[in-house]
Image 1 (cartoon, rainbow, N blue to C red):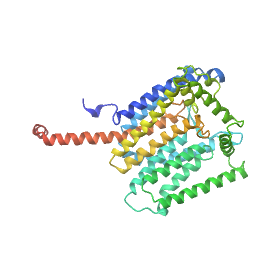
Image 2 (cartoon, rainbow, N blue to C red; image 1 turned 180 degrees about the vertical axis):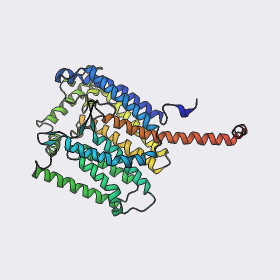
Image 3 (tube, one colour; image 1 turned 90 degrees about the vertical axis):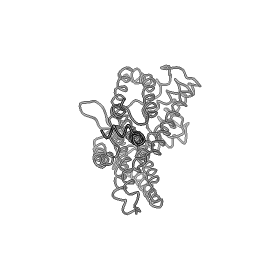
Image 4 (tube, rainbow, N blue to C red; image 1 turned 60 degrees about the vertical axis):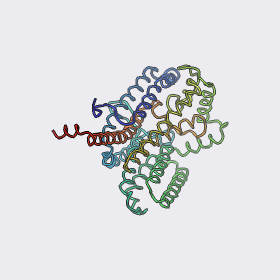
Length: 402
């Protein structure tokens, strides 16, 4: 069978791990959603499971479609989509929700569909592809800080600053991943230090301004401060400590092998048990074995990302794989770190496992980009093998001549 007609191409190990994660996610999502169904009184667990399955089915459809696109095309796509993503972030900031004076504008409603779209997820993927393109284009020429301000740091600043007031953790994650990518792309270290000092200055100025004039810009600065204080003082009263304490009880209850699928008790007392704190429910039901197995799954994905980046001959291919892949792993580690109180509460979901909206689609699209790079590598290998075998086989030469 000719491989060019195969539905799936690229790294089959990565395909398999992603499929297993998606299938596995059905169990904790169905179990944890009973909190919303019976405690909060919204829908039924079967409705949440069906919605989660539908989102993942469409997500894998996007993944298959994107990985069929030659990855070099993503250079132009990122240039076209970056202004669109920035405009969507501006629209989200102006049309979002303000709760108790705090900026909670992270989503926009998709008309006629009934789904919400978190624009920061689109902006982060597009921005990382654009940064990879910029670094690959200027890889052979010495870069000055002045020449990179407009084409590189201006788009990064727009995206990060538009996300910052409503979602500090996502803004910091995007900024740190950009810094990692430009470092790997050979950007001068002294210029990176300038950017880092400037970013710290802007963040400090924003926090001081928000505290001095709380009504001027809707923000979540007080929420950030309270989460850090709750993290430093675990015994203090607070909603975040309530969540973390319940999560730790769920993890401790799970033991080595867990209580069994669907037998979680803390899902009825733990807010966001199907999204932000789903890892605690997984450990409670599947035990230490399930928790470590999930960690190993993400580490295998990270290993395959590194392998694909290493095998790719082009600078853009290497950088784009690292740029869109590593943030997903960091997000997973942050989610699990919050559940065990290694990190303060951030609101980051567990990729490919947590229930959610269209943010899962962007994760699937990011993996589609990675698989597109991997597919190109395997295609080049197959063409090289065919060319070598044709050169060594007189019958193949005669066949091609005829």
